[in-house]
Image (cartoon, rainbow, N blue to C red; front, side):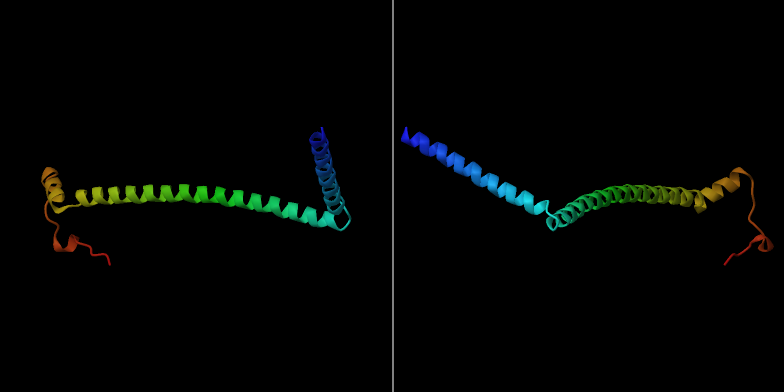
Length: 113
């Protein structure tokens, strides 16, 4: 019976201490001096989260653009390879024979620098 009463008293003192601390914190936060500080920290926290989310979103866009750039680079290499194949000496000679073309004369050659 005595142990039970001491447990009840211990719980009562813990709850009363926590209530006192909670009331003290509430009175300081919601006072005329504490509320602007609390509001400032809250605003800074919200802005930090928003800026961080925006930077992550921008990182995703940059990653997507880099993938697109790499695709275009690969396509450019493939097209350059096709162009080199079509302009090869062997291919040009076979097209000349196919369409019955002759060698150009000296005055027909234009050099571009």
